[in-house]
Image (cartoon, rainbow, N blue to C red; front, side):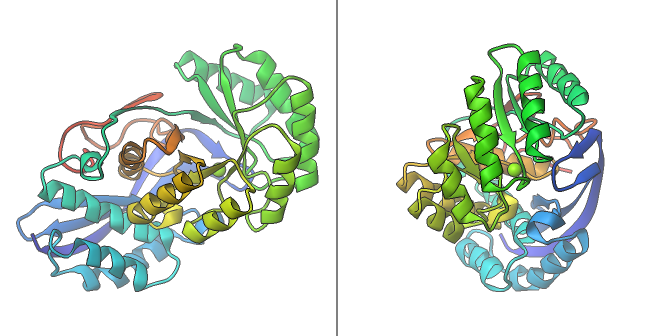
Amino acid sequence: MKIKRITTQRFSAPLKHPFVTALRRVDRLEDIIVTVEAEDGTVGYGEGAPTPQITGETLGSIEAAVAFLSPLLEGSDILESFDALIETVHSSIKGNTTAKSALEIALYDLKAKALQMPLYKMLGGMQRRFRTDITISLNSTEAMIRDALEAVSRGYDTLKIKIGESVEKDAERIQKIHTALPADITLRLDANQGWSPQETVKLLQKLEHAGIVAEFIEQPVPAEDIEGLAYIKERVATPLLADESVFGYRDAQRLLEMQAVDYINIKLAKTGGISRALKLADLCRSYDTGCMIGCMLEGPIAVAAGVHLASAKADTIRMIDLDAVSLLASQPLPGTIRFEEKNITLSDASGLGISL
Ligand code: MG
């Protein structure tokens, strides 16, 4: 099944509420959908959302990178040349991890469709049902409590609280949110690089002293501050999860060797797609370190790819943070994968189970 042409289109969908972290504020989902069309008319879909503050990419740069790579892939057979196509994507241009991921997802979708298999099965997975957390955006404490209670009323039992403003405000905010919620709700904290190592230790020790131990604290310090992560890990009981500090295999290897974190957040937009995410999960497994699968503020095709990956590496990817579809005002694309608030269920349709 030869690849005839590869195209991109811009995709946009409104959010239920603005998405706010310590790094940015977003009111709409804006991303790129990649379509890989085979000569017989079969199509594979991929998707990637630019997060300039994290990967350095924009809508225009993703389009340009895919346009640069496409002629190198067109004309090749998706089944006979699959591994070579993936290597071409990665060896022909540095960086551009979201563009590579969007293109890779489309290649994997097309291959699975050519084999008439759901992608998770093609990757060796069995699990079909997953439970995601939901993000509570950084806001006034009152608004965050309101959003958290609303999420609980919609059935969520795990909340990812965005913080990272100032440690004093954040400590008070977390304590108030914790008090307002039912006792069986699990809290994940994500500071998006907002604190120093010393501030992080101070804040977490304060929370721990008050009996609040979150499931983890995610990326409290700037991405480059690897020593800072190790400093924190030695001093607090709350597990530490690296997000922006780990894009790919080498970043992870360094952190794992230093025993600087407890968990790693895998995102396809950081690894450059599924092939590298599979290797990253295997690396973490060899260090007996669990992973979370996360997503950018991206659309259902990209999120679906994360779910298939989670199935393929269910032994290592034990936490699911794939809430981007639930943050949209409505589900914008047809598909057989079901996103029902916290419950995500894969189908046995070929490929990703989602289309345009
Ligand atoms: Mg994060």
